[in-house]
Length: 236
Ligand SMILES: NC(=O)c1ccc[n+]([C@@H]2O[C@H](COP(=O)([O-])OP(=O)(O)OC[C@H]3O[C@@H](n4cnc5c(N)ncnc54)[C@H](O)[C@@H]3O)[C@@H](O)[C@H]2O)c1
Image (cartoon, rainbow, N blue to C red; front, top):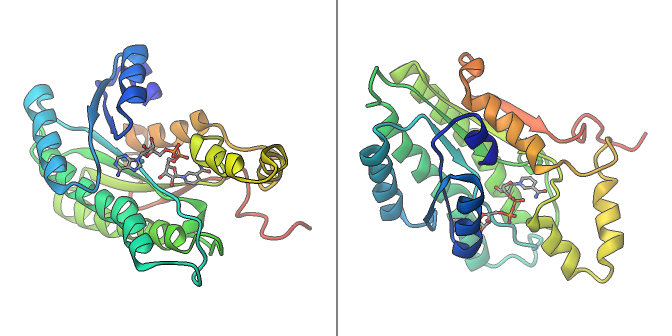
């Protein structure tokens, strides 16, 4: 979000953590709005508001995501639905609503959607069955949206980003919940061949590229930002 502001974008960002959102808005100049991505009506209202206030929508980044630690044997139906609701259904409605406005952008249909999936869109994470299923869904849903938009509107694109391990509150929560947070942090840092976790700014760079006109012929692609993790499926 910060990177988009630095590039001169007028940025509206949303979350359900209002205190952090307001503070970030103050620090960056971006506009914060409360939005639960599982609320379909809120998506419709928000996108209409962006159109009314800013006249157009050029970029949507679907970044909200939740992780649930559960193997297939531990998984509950409620848990599965909760993860899919945020990571897949919310994101799908976001794509639909963004396209509704992007196709009416002054000057003709144009826009870029970037969906944040995960490296777990490529392989099974035993300890996160719902998360793995959701990120795999995002990977292929992105391609369906991309093909539809390319054929129908030409200049509306949709791509996915696949981070490996990022140093964010999502992982910090897992460290804090473990018996030895320092050891777990070190273990995570060792997963990626680069020997460290990826910084959020490095993910933002990839998102910025896919959202920009530099990627004007890049559609339906999967951008791995995983420190080489997928290139090295074994420790040899
Ligand atoms: N951290 C990692 O190692 C990692 C790896 C691969 C992919 N990802 C993906 O990157 C994205 C960002 O994750 P992160 O690591 O910054 O996690 P995070 O938990 O730090 O941030 C996720 C954000 O989503 C928000 N959110 C959750 N449910 C929401 C809802 N219903 N409506 C609106 N907002 C909601 C949270 O409040 C939070 O601010 C997620 O899609 C995640 O799956 C993260």
